[in-house]
Image 1: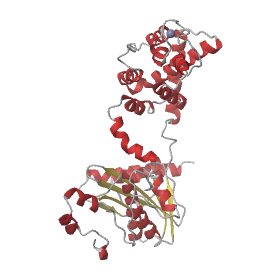
Image 2: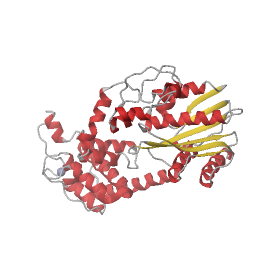
Image 3: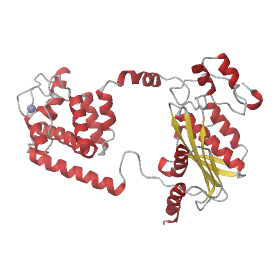
Image 4: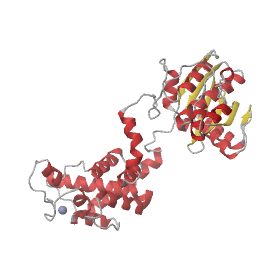
Length: 391
Ligand SMILES: [Zn+2]
């Protein structure tokens, strides 16, 4: 290390270590404030080992060839009430009280389907193979093969969702939920609904979901949050980072704006040898503080969309995560301001910093602006200002 410049002695590191190890070492961020060396566990944002994170690190090896994993990713993206996503997850995990499952638990002794009296009632039977379910699917106009010994429910559903595409996947989840609900009503209330009536309600429900979704922007990524202006005399510093795992490059965007939403300064830069997207977000905060200092602001609000980085910055306790050095650097830099608040904002309220981070991917050099920014960035800022004006 070159202590006087708080940087790695690159040539010495490259001379002593093999190329892979040297890259890893040079990716460790250094702070201009003196810190003790410490070991960290990179699987957890806190830097402390947990069984959960150990399991997660092993998971890719387990899941890459597992259709369940692919299916889970698909079903959580389907636009429908969360109870339907959860119900679908329960079907896949076989966490539903079918007659077969109740027999295994010795609650009942006869697994035969109460509706058709033909086969044992497991998830595949209720939702696809039972003649009742078969009529629902055919009335919906969906061509889907029966589930066989060679094709599990998971593989069948995965194929079906891929076949219909994202537009129709809501119909599929609503249908599964409706068939299961009809089954429960039949068993517990003796209510017999015709397959055609179920299809009518499935279609009505799917239309309602799409109407609600279009009207209110309903989806699982939470409501749309808008950028809010700082209160005078503070200026707001929005920061964001993009990260490329392979090249270990982070593109960093910083936007400094006043109470009317106009630019006072902005930058779009690249950081090299960044270890993770988590560290990239911390790097963005450090860049934002440097730009605000360089431009001479002394009361600022720093806003970023990484909840864990912001919570580390406001925490009184020392951090031991892989971003610890950068967090410490940011905390140290913040002492140079008369006032410096760190605030979390949802991604939708951080679109200008995001656009600035993306901008660096399309140009060859780092860019810094005062007052004026490129047209595409100005468009994003103008959108933020429009919301400031609206009542
Ligand atoms: Zn049946």
